[in-house]
Image (cartoon, rainbow, N blue to C red; front, side):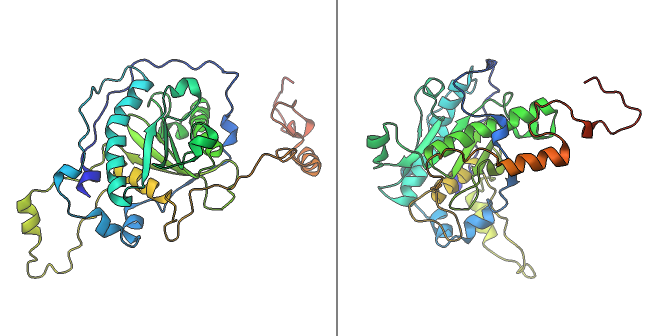
Length: 323
């Protein structure tokens, strides 16, 4: 437990942010995100309720079995350098925890090489013996992740101006596209400040654009207790039998660990499997029916946002419209 709840590095904000010009190769758009809901069940209580997880998280092992990441610079100049920092720290500790939890055959989080050029997500996670790389070339991820600078994307954008809300939705649409391309249900976005875990619904065939999100601050960690505090806390004074023990905090590493445990071969009790059965694209499935178009035209006077203003929208008296 202490290995996953210890303090994380605090990198500075990315210094240089390149303004993204409209790329003709971009395959995601902000309106792809149709519905966003909080992932309320992603918490410490849910983790503790999984059979066997309490013993797994509190197993007593020698210190040398827990790999310590090498120290690196915390002054990233670009998003690529920020990805390298997170790869050295989070991927190292997470893969160690997954190997101890799942055995020799375990999930591994790998950083994509030159993700900005290849179009791959920043991180792709699959099993150590994954055979999809032979078929698909790069391998299909069970969990995919993106690294973005805080100034470019953060959860606070959802309550700001419309242009910032569009950027917030565009960032989620970016992850949504990668999740659908890999056919997986779980993903995440990391910035310098926060980790956002994402689930594409719990149905076997998820709805397009439906995402459940939960935010964890990277600065969150459990206070490290000394041996004296642990021994002293093991004795209960008279009248303190009903004292509730302090629950551990949800940290970024614990969240990533649980997200990958959700993506293992055997689904956890009450949780959805990692695979999204979206099927192959079919012709005409993305087009609204003619009856729906007629209903929209009859009820509100227009179908698509780019259409001209209709008479039904000019009903307010005393207001001049320049149409």
